[in-house]
Amino acid sequence: MFADLFDSPWKILIVAIVIIVLFGSRKLPDAARSLGKSMRILKTEVQGLHEDNETVIKERIFLDKEKPDLLHDEITVMDHALTHPWTVTKSYRRERNAVWLPNECAEDNRHVIIGKEHYFISADGLLMPAKKDQPPPDLRYFRQSKK
Image (cartoon, one colour):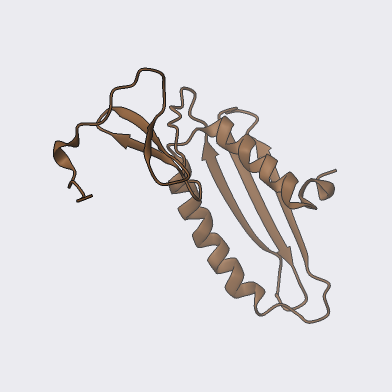
């Protein structure tokens, strides 16, 4: 059942989004840092895996039965190079009233914020208003170019 869950990057992305929605964004940096440490340890272990290509990695993600706000992620590696299966378990706590802050970090972002006003940069590099009847920015703080 779970074997088909992680066979494509899209499915992994969907699981990641579900985890973000369930547990909120505040705890994710700590969780990612913790998971990153575990993955670094796993990476050093994986470099020494057997060449017979019979490595089995199982991941089990489940909610705690007693505490529904607790998600567990259990990763087990079985390989002939290891003396016994290697398992790491991480737990994540859900934040019920998560605060989501918008953040755009796109390539070629044409949005500009000056003071409290939003503007766009046109294709020819000129500043344009983002809404109808928007006042122009205060030019006192900009160097005037000579024409």
